[in-house]
Length: 93
Image (cartoon, rainbow, N blue to C red; front, side):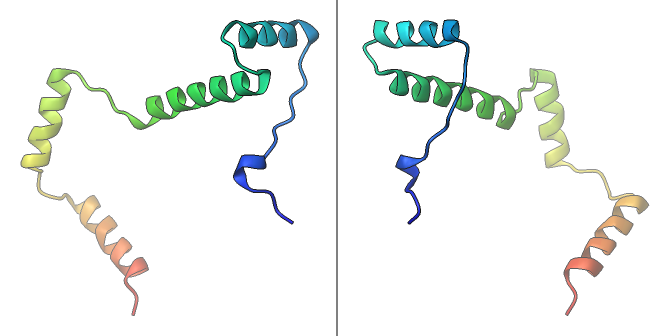
């Protein structure tokens, strides 16, 4: 019988001092240690994923990017060959 997502477990070994510190912090905010660990890990995961998925540009860089998007340069020979190779590989009939 497989477990549902809500039942997945992540075992963690840690030094006693770390455990006690986490347990104390959980108690301060009125959460169980499990709730505290899951919430803290989720917040950290969300932060990491947002940093990896968001591209931040200066005003000058964003203007240059939008200008290129609105008026792209003509494809050079290298790009034309790459596009043809892609078409040959993926569009076989």
